[in-house]
Image 1 (cartoon, rainbow, N blue to C red):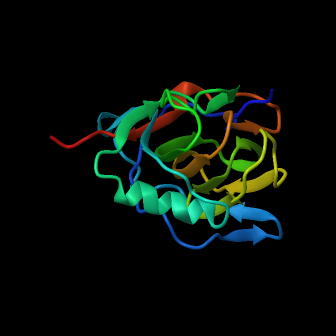
Image 2: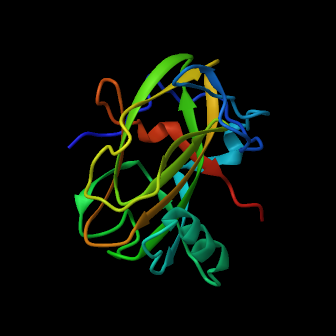
Length: 199
C-alpha cells in the first residue's frame, strides 16, 4: 500500500484564511495554490485535521453532492480529529469506527514547502480534495482502493500553511484514504493542523 506525503513539511508559523474559489492552473495540468492568508499563530491551531462524520446512503449518482447534503443536514454529526491521512484498506472508515455508508468532511491546514509537487490519491470510495484554493481532485465514484484519476501536480508558491478541505464517502465494504507524494512518503503528522475551537 502506498501512503500520503506532502513533502518537506515542518511546523512553523500557522494561518487561517478563506478557503475556496476556482481551481487555478499555472500551466496545463499544474494547479496553482494560494497560501492561507493571514497565516495563523501557533496558539490558534491544534494538531491533526478536524473531521465530521455522518451516515447514510449516497445512492449511485452524484455521490459527493449527496454526501454534502447528508453532512450539512446531520443534526448531531460525530466530531473528531484525524491524526494522519494514511488509512489503508480496511473494514472501518477512517477513525469513525463504522464501515459502509460513512461520510466525512475533513478540514484544516497542511504545511507545505515551496516548489512543484506531485501527489497520488488512493481512495475507496469517492473523494474531493480542495487544497490552497484549488480543486485538485474530484473522484465521484465507487471503486476498490485505487488511484482512479492518476497523479496531480501542484505549484506551492511559498513555504507556509495551506487550507485543505476533503469530502469523502465509503458506500460499500472496505474503506481507504491515502495520499502520497512522488517519493511515496507519508505526510508528517506534525504538518497537519486545524483551528482551535473558540470558547
